[in-house]
Image 1 (cartoon, rainbow, N blue to C red):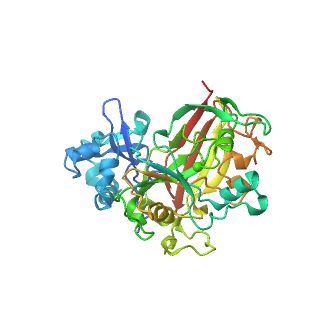
Image 2 (cartoon, rainbow, N blue to C red):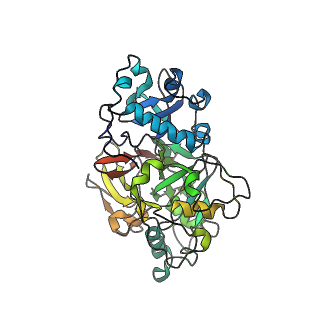
Image 3 (cartoon, protein in one colour):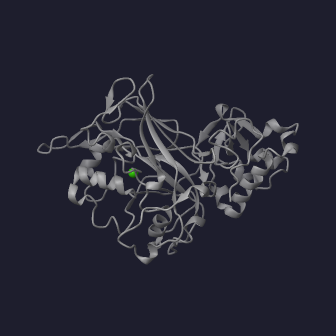
Length: 416
Ligand code: CA
């Protein structure tokens, strides 16, 4: 059980999204330090390698002075969970001895003076389509309003294999992608910049324990294979997608850039936010059955900010709205013997809630361009404009303590 009354002596940590109960992992460097493993606390980053050097922590140095978390994560939960517990003891308000160390400064770096990097080397990336409201909205807009969900949707977590090479860290700028679209039904396709650039509000989980080819992961074993979670913006070019996606699914509309938040929040840190998911009817096949609370009450929001303009919150959703949970997604993904490797990333699919303001994409919020979204500067959007910055945020909250992810920021630049 996580003690939400616990406080830290680190200034500002208790009221930040990185309190002592969170302690997420990331990769950072500073002007004087090479890339390394860090842990967020308040507005500071704990340098784990520096703690090992003075004997406060005992972890192989080569996994810490590293450009990704993969080797650290591969040490297993028995090690990584203990690191979080040991760090919490060091940072606890009652640990006056550690707080008073003369050499304290060497263990901390200011976030404002650090550069964050991709936390893991992503070998493979899969994107699911597991929000019922999102799948229903898309089905209504593009297919049959009366039969919005395709026949397989309620029986299995639909997904596709995405592209790992174009997943980047928060702060990214990317150019409006070019490609084939078919703006007029009766005319031939045309080539040019996408005119329908969208965000997709998602949460992705990172695999923490590998499996061998031929091996499956049950829903019961699944959490042991999930290291932690990040916010995930699956940027999408809707006009390219609409023309290309039949019959094999998304391709160039999705693989030009996806953006993640910088800190991997462990699944253990989110334990207090477990909730029941929607009752699944029809009954699922035995390999997809699960016990316990597998959904998470994590508040999510998306904002858009025009260049030099004011930020407008355009969506407020929640990770709890997933129809298929992460354990089912992982069980389904591996039921055929597909192997998982440490650092693999599996994203939720766009997370929409039942209410209009809870829709997780502009496609839905502006209902295929028919209901423009008002911005604070008096302009409207149906899709993203050049130089718009999109920010995803997310946090669980209990007893006034917030467990957050850090922002997932990306800016759309004009086509080149
Ligand atoms: Ca997606």
